[in-house]
Length: 204
Image (cartoon, rainbow, N blue to C red):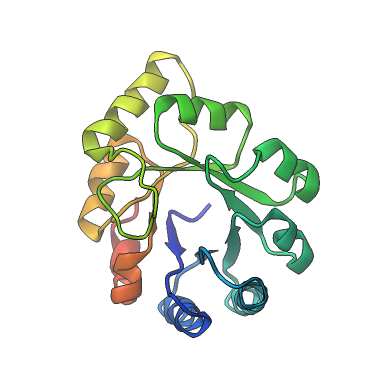
């Protein structure tokens, strides 16, 4: 599983498509299409386009929230927030070959995600971010460390956890040292797609 995920950004279909194309051109290998409050037809068109592009670039294409849409366009998987429906139902609809990711904010959430089970966990936010309307309590590095230590204390194997929430290039190594598997990045890559290559240089 890739250690760097790009979560798409943009207020219009045109912005979204432009940002996805730029990320692909700069070598991203995992895209999560995320466009909250989008008109349904435009969202479907965007996801179809993203799936086609990701196939051409041999990149993983994950859709945020919309399980049925993932099935219809044969995307690689879905990412579900804590209130976006159950992992179990998504697995029933999509089958075992699709990737299912789940959001978490606390160790309780992480334990829930491990038990459901999902393929990876998006844990955050690391710090304040404008990309989420209803932001969960900010974790900071200390919060990640507490959760990882909490799992170790329970003798639970550390799952594939991705840090989310205003993650920058400088955060990557400290997070990996804590035991975090990878990072999900939105704003930093949207503003400067060339940073993708910098991330790849520091990946262990």
